[in-house]
Length: 90
Image (tube, rainbow, N blue to C red; front, side, top):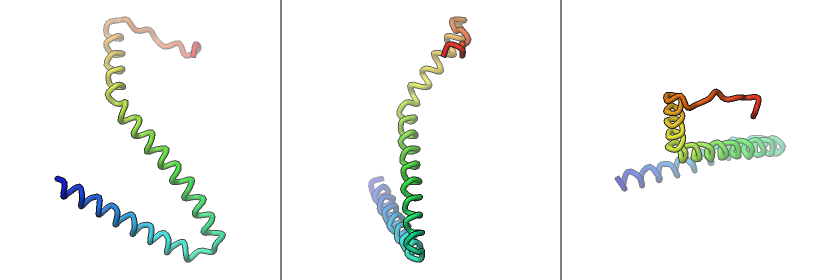
């Protein structure tokens, strides 16, 4: 199992460096002003991806608790102990 993990990590690093080299070559064909626009766009895009990844991690960490809350709510509803939410009071 350790060998497979090491291979995947090595392959991932190779793919990363290959992708970066490809992007660099593509950007070098652009005028400087266009390169700056691409960099700005990539910064925003990467920031959004990092934000999405962080949210995914937080949701994964809280998945068990969310399931427990849902089960508790279903139990309360089944026992007749739940009331409809009054959205006007929010």
